[in-house]
Length: 84
Length: 306
Image 1 (cartoon, rainbow over the protein chains, first blue to last red):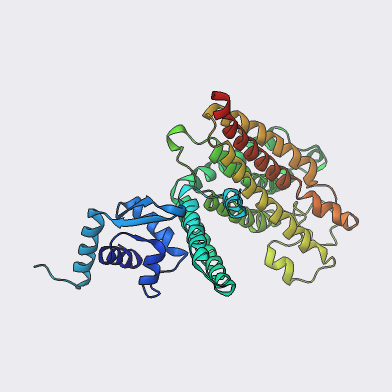
Image 2: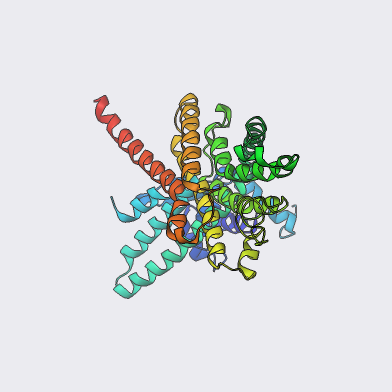
């Protein structure tokens, strides 16, 4: 997963189902308002996240099991966590 | 319809790109509704504007990358090769009338230049052909902005650099021999666009004509991609028939309007500048007209069914 995808997956797991804008605000400038939806669209195509339509044309995103596994694998690869 | 929705509909985006832009607009509406003062609302609007530009840039870059990977570039190149072969055969079978007056062997020398000119003319149609004649199994929605940008860039490259360079390799047979800048058949004056600006010339308008003509053709290429996108949902045979008719019409209008081999006259400045835009304008109007008609038919269909 790319760096921005890793940030999004981490935030989605920490915060739970979230809007794109909430992820941008929580990311402390690591994600941008314009770029996040292109990244989220790509992640949805890969099956890393799923979304559902909410009010006002906004969408709520949540991580999939594949997304959670991909994040774990990325963290292992980066040495951020160790195999128990 | 709200202005933002109207603008969004007008953008030549695929479903993925449109969704990204829609979500930015939805955030804009959401934050704007929560902003208590006009100043805060203005700040929200400014942020949303920047976000919209970023989203559009990212969608465009993604589409440019994907368009190359979708195989459309390969089929466009194949179409260009087909056009080049067709022009070669046509000019071999039916050489222009002036050839009879040329010394023996000269036509063989200058024929590649002629073929290059007409092949260059066909670059926009090569992209159009690749889209409208795509096989059924390839009928994934094309990344329109990406294909349009590739078509624009390829036309600028071929018509702005390759064709004049290739053409400049052939000796000059038209015009006065005392003006060595006028080498070749395209009458573009200089082989490349940068050279057209950097070299002193007896007529400062020539680079302008050259740039105008190349940009007009590149715009025609992008407009043809939009036209092909309007034909995309149609059945394959209908797309093919419409594609053939459109190609014949575009070639005919182009031949009539472009005035490629008519002697260059500075007195027809505005006429020459505007004539280059006949094909791109006609194609763009056709694409927009087709889009509006399709939308009306789609809206009327549920009513007819009732």
